[in-house]
Image (cartoon, rainbow, N blue to C red; front, top):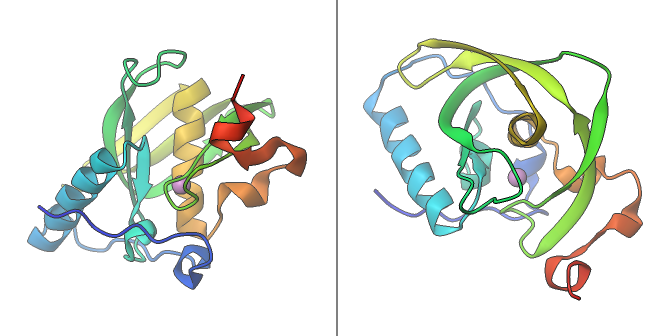
Length: 170
Ligand code: NI
């Protein structure tokens, strides 16, 4: 396992569309996922997309426990490949987001409140989940990385975008 360098906003790879994964359960894929898990843990993130570590494929990992995110629901650790997201209603809600590719910043981003997502795990096993709230937000954020979309581009009012230590200081 190895910690990979996380590419930061401004790098052209973060604006590209990722390619679908065509082969599952390969040594190469397992190694990349292990490295991404270690990289995400090292950076204390709730999610990481393959393009953020320089791999332009449709693979994201995410997960959060309530110890680190006490105000949010926990999200089971998930490897999601070739995802398809379908909103389950028009309802959106605003929430604060950060991104390991935009370190130190936070922004208020509208996301669909309830979604379905389908995809595969690293073994090619199909996944089909209806989720809401924080879980739905994290999935939408991570899958945005696969279409070259970063969360600052989704902020409706840029007054609600800034440095974390300033925004949330007393
Ligand atoms: Ni991100």
